[in-house]
Image (cartoon, rainbow, N blue to C red; front, top):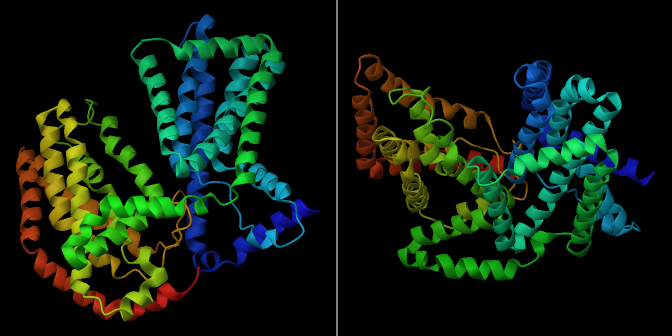
Length: 493
């Protein structure tokens, strides 16, 4: 059967890849982490389903959960949009065979609905279905409700696929939809209207009249056909509009070429980030990490002298720079041999990457200035950590990047993708977060947390003053390791 052949080919491809063979320990670790996450979701859903009726009166037990489920689906939409990879497979070889394009597309779409996020939703809703909905409305209603929730989840899944494909060609449309979703959430939270109440009433009505579940089923068919038509017309969307986008980026950032070789290298790195799937995934995630402080800064649990605030300050002002410099050479693995034979000045090459990383930190710092709303101490933390990132973190990350010997495949997405990552990536996280916290905590314990921030800022300023020396140090290390790195980059994963 053709579908079984596709599945067999996908399985063999995964098992025979060099990534699987070389990183078996990492694959096992990822599998264990996934099992832990799944076990935590199972535990949380069982506790929630067992005790939910004790939190609300009997008349509001189900409707209150249905209100919250709106935000679950909106959160699932956001997480999938930024993290879930598109359902793709290598079909170039199949296109040369007498196989209908429609068959290939149906396989891609059906395969795409089976993923980790869908499994999480199934695990999350199942206990509540039979322990709460089944108790109040009966077992049949519980089955219909569970199937309805999974239909809504699949709708989210397929609409995310469609929007992510549209994002390549029509950024304005996708931005408008995301803004609309944000307005829904904001309006509901601020009590301008109650979209969650409307959703809860619709679910209650569907439980009483199961025919209403045909609505999400019809939407699912519509979403599936929408994706089908889109894939049928543009089987490889990455190939569409490339020339136009390249000209746009050239005009937008072309002024960097005025700064000589450094400007040209910065321009090439910007183009690399904008054009490739894996780097674009990180760009899309950046606003989420800028907003990371909203989870902690408003909370009384995290005081101004908490060591955890140091971690948050480093993260929101330096996330994109850290991910960029950590793999600065691995991103160029596919043409690293050309760089070695081009006679490029390595010190200028390194200076360009440090300059671009520093500019991103400065931009991130100014974007997060509104955190001043939560107090001056938050501004002091972010300022100190931005300076620490500028002076200390940027050269440290680039120095450790010279020990990376695995090229990164830019055509792949970033979510749950550990291709190109090595032990060096994980080891660099230790001094990045442990060292500044270790410096800060003694000052906190003796009652002078502000002095700890001053020391971290001073370290950043001192290392910033010695940047020329550090560039030469990184350059010497790069010269020593360049052939080892080139050999590693040539290995195709």
